[in-house]
Length: 310
Image 1 (cartoon, rainbow, N blue to C red):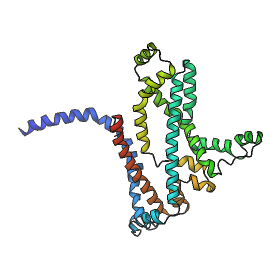
Image 2: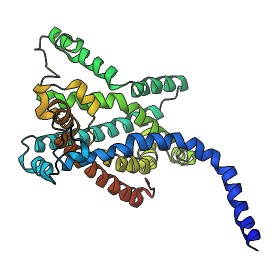
Image 3: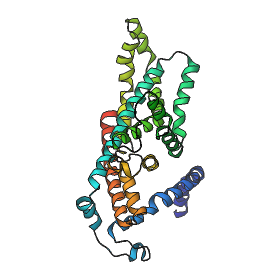
Image 4: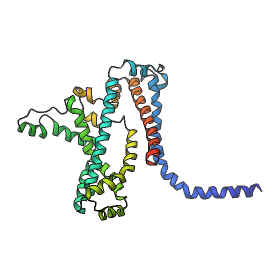
């Protein structure tokens, strides 16, 4: 009897192993990389609660509790300004980038010539594949004191503008360059949403005498609202990700007042000033806030877009 039971139970298990094991083997390298580079380094968070000394290691350094968090919130002279910079830059990128992507997608959707539409879409999408090292070098060359932009300004009789050395201009440069790099990719997402709208709605609007602007206002825009809501809620999880790579390449001590964000602040504290524990506390705080925003974004996506993020 026992043999029969084992045979009955074991048969589905063998079939499952035969059918599913290749898929899990294919997944294994990704899981290993995820563990090594995403989960295993989290052990280093212990530095935020110790006075870390490299020669004593993670477990040998003296435990100090919440000392570095207290210093961050109450005694750090730069934290409030850095947090404000992070939120302002991130919100500006989300707002301006979303607006630019929607407007460009709506305009491109009205283009009749297929070859011209595909060419423009490819050209605007291309910068998304370039790294910030390349984009940053281009921005520096264009906006430097001897760059082409300042030469044009000087040719019209105006004084040169220190775009990358002025707190007044730096955020504008950061947001504008980020939008230029990414709005083509955002437009692709909205064009995909537009392609999913029922063509019969447009035909009915034409029969009723509706022109392009009326079709855009009453059909296209409402049709992409679910996508807009979902992407906007997803962006909430990145509210403290203001672009570390971009700002590290473009900023300098003259614009710390408006350009220094949590990521660059942690970099300078930990790598430049060798304050490992304090830098870990800054990163830990950013991660906790980001997690809270991601959970909130998931709830908002379920409620307003009827879609789950996870």
